[in-house]
Image (cartoon, rainbow, N blue to C red):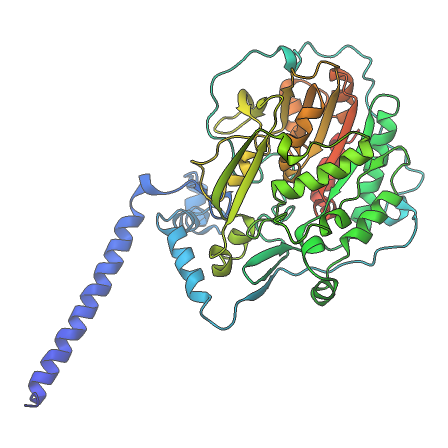
Length: 490
């Protein structure tokens, strides 16, 4: 029996009321969750950044309205940025977006590249600098240093908290594009991300000038090595695909860099060596770094230049494995579903001589504190975005290890970005003393400790014999990174 018109209207009215009540209930629940102050996150693990802080209350801010609506730090921005369910909602939105059309191939923030010049060039002219401009020289390191104990004599401290898991600690280069951490160029295809390299003529020339200046300052004191680490596209993608995307040839670019460096600099070419292994797991799918295996093949190339015998992988008695890694490509692509379906596994080889290191970090503090740590650390309790931090303590300003299995007094300093983190464990069994600094925050650490903020001063202070510049080839195209390098490459 068909319902009467009145019965139909009553049923329709009840349905509308139920929908309205559900909607109002959903809004009330969302508002209640927004009031849960204690549940608001301070750091986004997915985006690897610190979230907006609650603004400082002031009469001027209330009068002008900036306290409520400032796009960078107002209450409305704070409320949205720290909403307790923000990250699950972002992931839900990304999953929904994946259903709009074919998303198996995606290009995020494509860049433009300069032509790579042939031969050697006038670096000063390309960098926009006067060729008569005198180079910055190191300060007189023979002058008495301030009475700060060397790290060898530092006292053992308490157990460290979980170290910083974001790419940048807030010191030095604040350009979030430096290593494709937030919005760099990414090509995503078939469940894997690839970092894209675009040669920048002026900044590349400037980097060579800085390296050459450092080589002059280290002459007669330490041997300088240059390791420009390739990023994944130049190794893993075909030449045809690279041409379609419009990015630069990393092997050709590295050759240009090395041709224009001072002859005293020992250079380590890696692109073709890694290409020979591009059917192996040498770059992460969801992150911009190479894997430990990729770093190992780079280490073998360094050994050839250094003139030492590389250790085989079977040499390492202990390994660690961490599953479920979702790195910077995943967070920078709005949590791409194809990457989420292909999480990475982080493999790490523990050095034999020692797995102990000393590091300085300002994590959870207003100043740098000294902690004892492990060169390869068990990060099984870390979030899935922080598993690469198993290597070398992450991105701390100053680190040190003493391998007591070697007693010849040999020493090395690695000037690094995060690419070198996976490389450093392979160096441990070749030196008695191993130092590594992250160029992005080394200066702030020196200023706090009372040291001169220069590489040559550190070399003189610790009697270091070898210096390895180990940065990825993309970071040296960043003017912000070069500004920071210029302050310490002396």
